[in-house]
Length: 437
Image 1 (tube, rainbow, N blue to C red):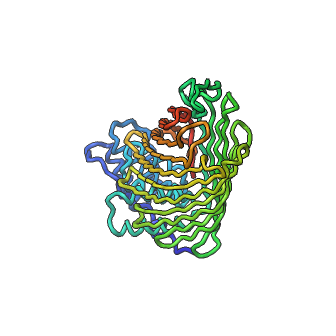
Image 2 (image 1 turned 120 degrees about the horizontal axis):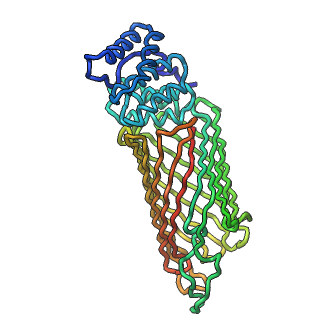
Image 3 (image 1 turned 180 degrees about the vertical axis):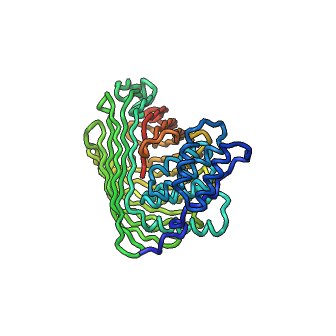
């Protein structure tokens, strides 16, 4: 069992302002100050009536509007109307994503609701701001409690996805095989189209000991196109223990996944993975992961083999409105036929920033190098690929319906290869809705 909820979660409402307007000579400001005084004297009902009246009055003073929403949010929390409180705090953060005090209260509200993933995100952002030592210690207690209490999570993203190259085919019409030119079939060349994509994940992690959980999770990716021969779906399942210590998270999982392509079985993979994450402090962490899996292909057993990879990663919250993570990994995929075996290296970064006005922008560049062990009979050289990927995402925080938010993602892929057949570019756009808890 974890310790008690941090003391701040049970304190009465305080009218300590985010920022109070400097104007003091009007009846409107007097009413706002009167509401704050009433709150400090425990007369919340009277204060709320005044604040609701002020909320309906037009004003061009954004600071004043934010203060009204903040106080109403605090009163909503005291009334345990957490949904309304979240809505009010979210309105403030749309215009001022660096409002640390608002993030603290929003994180506390999510914590009270049991939405620990959302609470953790807000506390991490808040901790990157300038906070007194006593508040930092309280935030750290919340984050420690969240790591132990978080037992259920899920996320869903649905999008319409125009794609310039559904099958990652080459732009050329002819290629050289065995030193002779051959015409590519229509399905082998680059095919464009519009599809519907669904990405979903869920995890249940009940406690089985003081610092131990048992994780059970599933992930689904489905891309459905009018040209059904390019439909792509992967279902992955995993389970295993997680140990949560003061500065460590340790996971040992068994994994199995199944992929279908063109609505036909494509490959099955299974094997163990292990990872360890160390928190240097609550907003900076590093990790290492190891993965071993056997992959078996339905149509070509010569590709079957054991895969191994090891990776390093980090996450960092530099400001109260931004988040950064990165990863580097090296791997080896064996195969029955050496021409299908390869080694790989990958480097990736991900940066997300919330801007005033409600927009959240993300950029994620990735570089992948793949070197095959031997040449196929049709080619004179072993395949060498260098893939450059950039993903840009745009999310509008002003629109939120029960946690569902619109999102646009653009992905550009440039796969450079020493063999024409495997050289391609791809532009993909996803316009849809996303939700995670």
